[in-house]
Image (cartoon, rainbow, N blue to C red):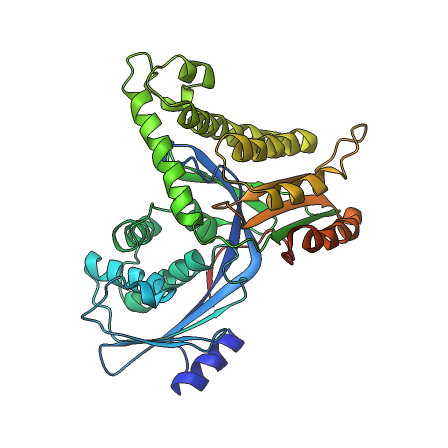
Amino acid sequence: MERIGECHKAEYGCEPAVAASVPGRFHLLGEHTWFAGGNTLSMAIDFRLFISISPRDDSGYRVFSVRTGERKKISASNLKYRKEDRWVNSLKAVIASFVEYGEDVPGLNITVLSEIPPDSGFGNPNAMKVGMALVLRRFLCAGRRGKMQDKTLISILERANTHFLNTHTHRADIFCALYSKKGYCIKTDYRNNSYEVSSFPTNSYSIVLVDSKVPRILAREELDLRIQECIRAYEIVRASKDVPADFSAMDEASLNEIPGIPESVRRRAAFILNEATRVDDALRLLKKKDYAGFSKAVLHSHEGLRDHFEISCPEIDWIVKRVQEFIIPEKPDLICSRLTGRGFGGCAYAVMRSDNFSGFVSKLEDYERIFGFKPSFYTVTPSAAAVIL
């Protein structure tokens, strides 16, 4: 609270009325299965975003980013998406969604201080939205008898994503920010709209996030195309009279028997089906402390992203392969790596024995020589959920 408070006071000349801290995140498995009711396994990380607000005398909004020094003015009468507003659209989306819900949101000073590496795919926009929603809820509900329930807050955040930002709900991101526990990973169940936490081993293990630095100019568009192809296949499959009522019971063999699906789309849909099952299997293995089994599930997931969903790239595959070189077959252990996020570059995560970490960093020294990009890497630990400070 101290640093965000100091930054807010230096910018606006007053103490913040409310401040919040929200973790970054990455996805271990399943982040591309939401539309088919699949589950997602995620982890909040100890890089956090801080956000603070204080009331203004007018109806406008002033936004200040400590990291970049950027300042923006937002009109209360023009809460619309504008491409040139970039990251500020995340804040506008939440404010607009609160207004649509019926809340009278007054003019505000807003300060954002993020430790989450920018453009890394570690959940900076989501942390900003969740943080804005939390401070608004606390500020607007102060003195009221009834508190806004989490269910309502989640609906407001999902509406901000779907109606303002024109994307999907990002429920796994929201649940990860709101309900994670230190030392745990979290599964989001899209079928039941629920979550489950499970401990993740940290003693003797290192969790590393590697940013490949491969430019991802078309990553969003290409991933959207993959998803739309899978949704089209999903709709074709669901229209078949032989498909079970519970689509999660569908398997790849049944998919292969249904005509009318192009082969490339069939491969991608098969990945979605297998991944949806793999998340539950991986969590079961993790709970049993079958770390070698969990590691194999992660590897198979990456192979599916590479060969069937086709969103990986040589640079990410190289990073994943280097982690696998630490596997000793006669000594099964928790050693795994996988692409995480949108793909077409971006990031991979790696989990390994801590005594392998320096060796892995040494291997990364060859990456720039081979590919021409200098990777960034971050060691992280499973973090606690968002809190009001």
